Image (cartoon, rainbow, N blue to C red; front, side, top):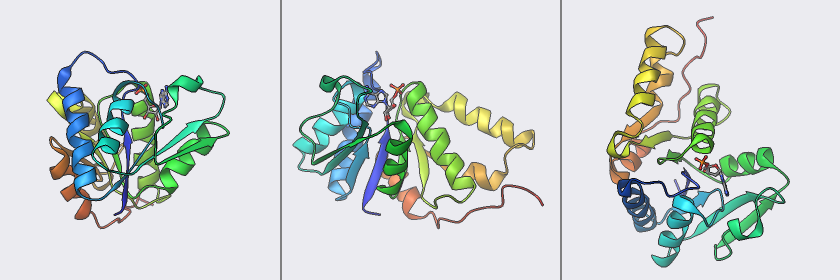
Length: 189
Ligand code: AMP
């Protein structure tokens, strides 16, 4: 594992625990010599992640769709900023350039990216670890919903187990290292 993609809010939000967790994750990634891959924004928790990792001497790669966000939104101080022709190309590149995916607290954009990276893992498009940092119980309801989906037979317990969860960055990255990249069968037959 040499690079980790982080999905997180383009807003800062109101809970200081989310900013603290963003800073802690940035430091942990840099301490482990992992390149940070993210959506390329200078705003919100996204900007905080990038600034913190860069200040700590880390490498940060951002992918941002050309013409979709205003110029001020793109972070101009990254190790590498890649402009793409749209959201789909951007996502494909984020997935290609990363060895694992972490969701920190965020909004609909974060949920979309988490859901897509987990979907792609369960159908074997990639074999990379996916997980959430459950800061201050932020993802507890989502994780409980996933358990309900398993109970109702719409998600296998093996695929559910591929969505890792932890409360600290170090714990989550250790779970990733133990992930064998396997793909459980999505369908019974
Ligand atoms: P949200 O959670 O709705 O704030 O959206 C955050 C996620 O969507 C990030 O992980 C980004 O990849 C993408 N995204 C949303 N807004 C922006 C933005 N202004 N600049 C760059 N990426 C964004």
